[in-house]
Image (tube, rainbow, N blue to C red):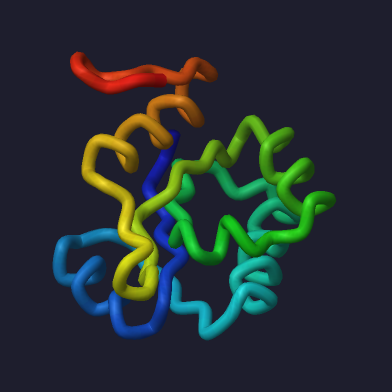
Length: 112
């Protein structure tokens, strides 16, 4: 794994860049898909972190292609959900773990 690539909304790019991470702005889902497609086409390697709102809106064919790309594994970063639809920190962590390890987990005291 050579580096971390972030695909997120333009407003968040400077913060990631200040942290020393390669961050790329996408104004919409189509732009995010085009950027990632370009990386897949050229065989870019690294860990890809995608704004969860973009990932949720990708078409199924693109998601299958992305999931099959072993050289560019991906994870989600919190998106810009409207008020009232925020996931709890635990739910967000559980979703990321399920994506990473393929198992659904529950925390003590929660029902799964």
